[in-house]
Image (cartoon, rainbow, N blue to C red; front, side):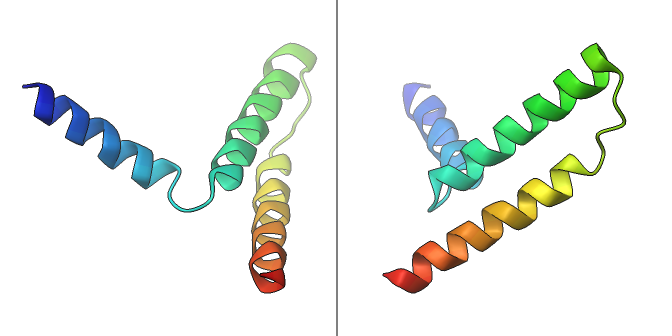
Length: 67
């Protein structure tokens, strides 16, 4: 059973985080910020997630190109 749980956790870590933990962190921050803006400040913040994805992808590509 322990092997199954460890394997399951490793799969999800690799699936969500993958090669670049900064992308995963950026997505979590963007989702949290969108939730705060929508639920607490009643702002229509649908545009935040596509912008965050574009910025994160651009930063990741630039970082990889510099290596």
